[in-house]
Length: 257
Image 1 (cartoon, rainbow, N blue to C red):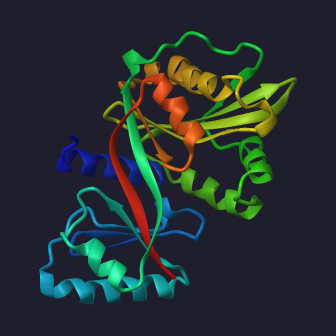
Image 2 (image 1 turned 60 degrees about the horizontal axis):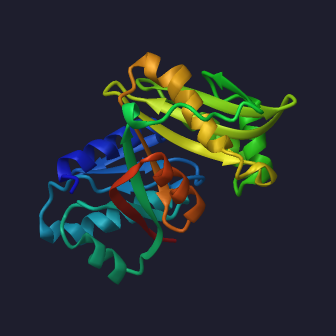
């Protein structure tokens, strides 16, 4: 079982890999504010709590007013060791609704089989989120062109970790994407994995992951691979489990509009 200390380290890794536009700190809670595109950069991280039980309700009201001032919903990212104990029940009693249960998966780089890459496609690695990367996602995912620009700004704020962006191509046309963020502790975080529907089940996502590990991550000191998958995304969960990734913890969001 993953310890509280380890989970909080991964939460720290995630905040550095998906940096918010503004931060505010309240009795150990970390409030993150970004134009409402993504929960990851626009939520409260209750990673620690230094207040006392009598202050919790008051602090929640302060949080709600803060997000209201940004014209944003209030969202808490509830990992398995949130603080204080009982926060989940308090928030639900205030009308918060649970959304998007997610598993964090991990594996050692040395356990990843780097063979069996689909060579029918070309895999290009960039050090910035190029237009081709964002435009493909804006065409085929729920986030439109404006929202992709916001996400591009988020990734431009990644400072300490190293980052890269992979595009899979067929005859010069982009058909898949993947982002990698490598922190100084040797953990490479994988996100924005996408393949155009008509090209799925051809090991393209698998090949992008293996390519970024083989050609970029290992040479930069990567020791472990980790990522997050919503429980409802059965295809992605099956893909990563087949690669050998294992669950290390889970979390969910509690949201109040």
